[in-house]
Image (cartoon, rainbow over the protein chains, first blue to last red):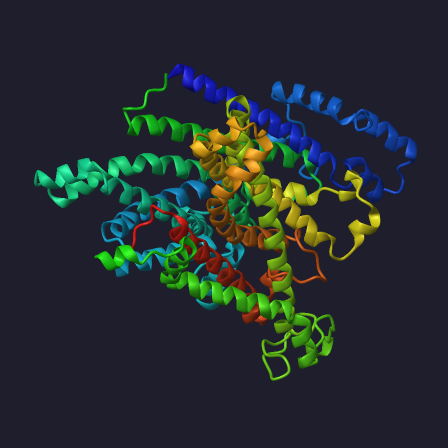
Length: 317
Length: 305
């Protein structure tokens, strides 16, 4: 167990390090560094000032030297400042991270809670009318453009019916939980629809695979009622492969969150990263991306642990 | 009974019959062909209708559907129907180029990993897993935001109208290979131990020849299925990037960038928001049904229905 965990942790750290270097390098290729932008917005800056500022920020050094200096500081917990927000990057990230966790967490739990029963029902009667209907809706779910789904929901629930706000978060600091919840409904609905289709497809195929096994025939043969066979014998085994594929989907979930947050002006990590890239706030974009990756790696690690808990036959030696 | 044994069929015919049984896949294939033909014929249709797609008409903004403009006009008074056809050209072209790029990279990596095994295999597959697990969209946004002149590309090329089309295709192709690579690797692993590969090795064939001549033809069907299934996702990625302003750049139309200003159109012309998204949706779902049908037809383990 310890050895397995150590190896996975080592791999995750290595991946983060490689990611940080690649993204750092890519960001160096983006148009305009912070001082160029400053010079453009302030005509009183002389070339000498610009040179001095670039030296101060080490922008005149080669990229690998800059990366090493950045990484050294990052390792001591100093991630630098956000150019646009004028605050330490971590101060900016904190509340956005919490809001994204709320959005992704609720949508994920809802998607799994819908996908498992629906997948089971479809798997119990393969090629029935119900199964075809489920199949059609899951195909629709993985094929719908996420931003278009958001637009349609806004058109229906905010413009036509005027039931729900079209985006944002409560304006007043003392807003009650109901106000927060109302602002979350459409983003959560969007992200849930985007995720539930894939999960249902996995659940259906894993469940069908489990129902084909010999121990299921044995369970039927010894006269167990359907709910015991399905829930105790088949479901437990179907959940094992499901956990792996769902864990691999965390990255997709975050990509979905980015679009959802952008569409509904929901100030989470995804929108923060997008705005940071578009607004040349490179340090914020870099650290935000690394934290998003960290979030996904932690999710993958938790899934690995859940895997071992679901399947006692696996030992992590 | 004897009759059934006697009636032998070629493999191709058998696969074709199995594919025909998948009615949704057939309908999807027909629909996609129609879409491709209509998009390809966009200049002809444009000439026949006499409504040039680039011609703005500010007196006629957001016009409702009429005989001259079957779907109305956009916020600059351009004919929406023709622009959707031109958008289809771009979106389908990007999908094709990106899918083929991803297929070539994925097949090569899968063959190398499966054939050589060992450390190379472990490294390549960890890389593939990492790319699958990463938050792809923000990474694609970073890739799309870099300044191509910094990579040494000539200025004239970067400034040309079509450049954004090739850039978005290349970016998506570069990150789309892992699923193909995993499938090819799996198939290569089992092929590597087969007698005909062993025989070729005994005859002194080199690694490159074995991979290209003996293994590749036998792993083509998973490659085709995986590529078809990947096209839908690629169209979605292109539409998202173009929608966010990082993919295909106006004035070139793509289904994604036609929706870029859609949040303002919701009030004035909601149908303009519906059409391009609906086309993306229908195209993607058709590619997914097609891939599913091919999968059932080519997978020997698929159950006969």
